[in-house]
Image (cartoon, rainbow, N blue to C red; front, side):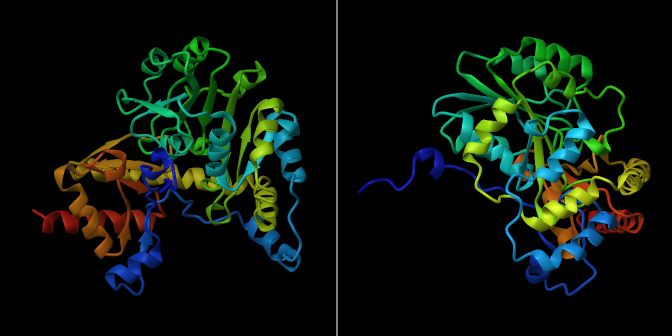
Length: 366
């Protein structure tokens, strides 16, 4: 009998999402009072401008969306000083990762990324029969020198998550400049900047500088995080026109729905919402850093809206106890970080609820 799928498909791991509120309600019998701090969503919600735009657009949902996302591309092009043809929209930036793998990877080619990074890079690459090489983190950040040493004639794509999910660390401008100087021109560099709006470090690299140099690269951005539109699934990539044209050939028609386009277009104008989101994040981090230190817990300082917390060998047990108390954080078992959980920075009352519940379940688990 013929095999239905190739071995590299059969052996793919499933993507492990953060638990939704409804699943925790079903699994633990909790009716209400659940807080979700697992999926790095914006705790302030979506832009009010986006919500108003959605309301006005609802009577038109019987129409197909603009397949080319013309108006959003025009607005993004002005924001970054690129041509509209250098922009491609996706059903979240996740879809663009998949499109890159479909368009460019052949079985047997090599992809390089890091260990303990966004798990979709190896999943989508392996789904094309590529060999994925994962370089260990260095001080919880990407080791760009180590990645450079792994480049061979078979190397096709390098994925760099900056800031990195799940550690929240960045590679700085000097390291990235040296790295880009060592990457051959025929190797695609994919820089995933899903959390760029939250970055405060002055050492963060300007990836657009390399795009202007005509480098073969994709810069991924999303409306799911700081813009608060995760439920609508819309992201985009900046690249060279020629590279985007290849993605357009494998993109399904109407991949970005009408409401998502309307909301994203409006959200791009809401700088006040982005500023409020950044301020809430920084205030929350300062408070969490202080309280976690008082509790004697380690953590990885972050440039994102999430925090990796070291709970030691009891981490998975504590994670499950938090779920039973209606506090959803993210287990790090699938990222080979078994002593950690990942916490999304929430509203002040949500951060306080997490800390209070964490203290309780830690005392109960001793």
